[in-house]
Length: 410
Image (cartoon, rainbow, N blue to C red):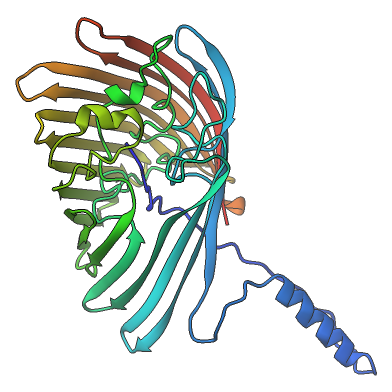
């Protein structure tokens, strides 16, 4: 799963500014009335805060797409959002200076999960439901926490938040195609195996296994020469660590990140995945490792991204998967960068005794056009997924789909 806080992607919110023009002041009897009118206009377009000490920034994005799908038995066209934690959302952030080099702040992240939230849609339901809140047309809290930060020592956060290992391998993807093309099964995981009642997510290997925000305490170090580390602990009970590096050498960008998470509770990493994926993985402590790397040659725009993930559950279940994406990111238009890419995923779920339980693979191609003036991305992609449950009564589905959509930041 897949949940996904692509949080931190989830990296994507931009604050839109605004400008106003003012006419020359009238020094006659109406001067005060004109001033009061201008103040009223500014107040009507300005986010208000409760005091003058703590800042307030409002950001987020709105995303929707049109998706045509074909499972070999049925085909249809849906209009949908792009998946929980990637859905249209708004984030309130702010901080205040305690002393030179020290600050305190907060994050409140709300997601407007429409009735078309992905991973909740399938052949029988073009209107899905909120995965976290378990109800349609919901506004759900994705993150809500406070933090204390030292420029020299790092940041400590407490509350509902993404873990240190949440989306670790995903977020190093700097190609500009992360949202429409990543390895989490947002697009097709909620669908059934053709005419079967078995959801495909039950047979899809786990890539972002620790992707659900939870009540936790998290530490993030400052960055030293491009390196940083994070760690978190939370209910009930899990812990994780992550390490990241980003740098550029002779026109080549490099980003690498790895994370390890462990749970001693049946609702931990790899086990708290929603829907039918819980069923084959539930029943023991779990250990999850993930690593991702991104390399781009800046002058040509050629890039390569790869990720690997492995989950080991003490009940005898193992999940292994890898994902690769390659393409070019180049500014051929005054609108912004264009991204052309191809992708491939291979995964499996096995028992420790060597018995294969399921296999899944996916390949796809796509194009993303960034529109800088509107802080917007538009995409058109094609994907073909093969999801198979092994065994005597196994089922297999070839799921093909095309999606056209856009995301606009504010």
